Length: 376
Image 1 (tube, helix red, strand yellow):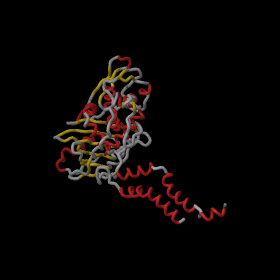
Image 2: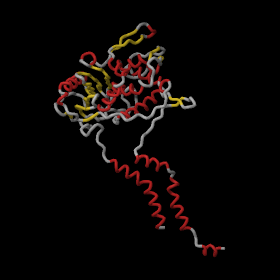
Image 3: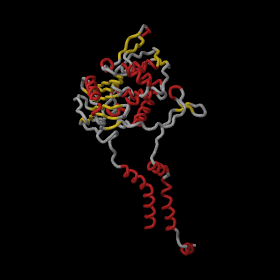
Image 4: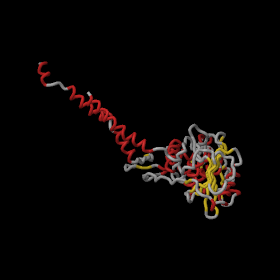
């Protein structure tokens, strides 16, 4: 029996050993982007003192070098409001054809929150809906775009969460692509800076973010009405590149802005601000440009992970198998060696680990030949 127990214990160690060792070997991890980029409400800067702002969290970074030049609670998980639409755009822009026509629905028109004016039965180009999403923060435009893509709103949410992971935006969890206050939906000033950097690297994103005015059709196609960009930075700040504003009751004012001066492109993100958010963003940008040569980085914007290989895409982001059947995009998870071993072990059926002890048990239960003869 002692041999049996030893064998059983050995089998258990074979399973649990690599799992425990890998977990123990990971140790505590530093905040993404550097040790100074925490959730604490302390302002972090090196070289000059930034102006006081009313936002609970902010980040100022150079999106060309990736250097974070000032921050306050950059990893605090807060409600993003419509600044989350920067991530929505990152997911939808490469998947949808700008020339596609989308017909408005009752579901688009009936959505909660800010609207640009998508009416049932009216026809809109995808290009115009993106303008309505960026300029007027139209939740109706977002809904129409999501439904036009494969998988609808649910598919967009899944892809947004995956995209956030690829970008290193680990503070972000998406449950509503419009940015409305929703259970479990959070982001951070640091993550918003990552979204802005990735977005401004795309010409189409940068164009929409910097567009000041567009025209939307009236009901019955009776002319158009003008829609102005809600990002006031575009109308009064030299070198402004726009990006995105946001507001909800719980999130309060949120902001993503960018500007280019003197060969530097800066992004500023602010979250949970009571009021005066454009003024605060302007002050932070101007301070950074003025003191740029004296400032030392306090962290860095992490580089995106390499995306998984893509299958040839069809209309609206669909993929097709060799047989021609449309299939949804597939996600892959890259495992390190320790995780690969764990995965392999966990794929082995439980009965395989029980087999050695059972075989040994058979040896103990086997009766001597002499005893078997007596029973005859």
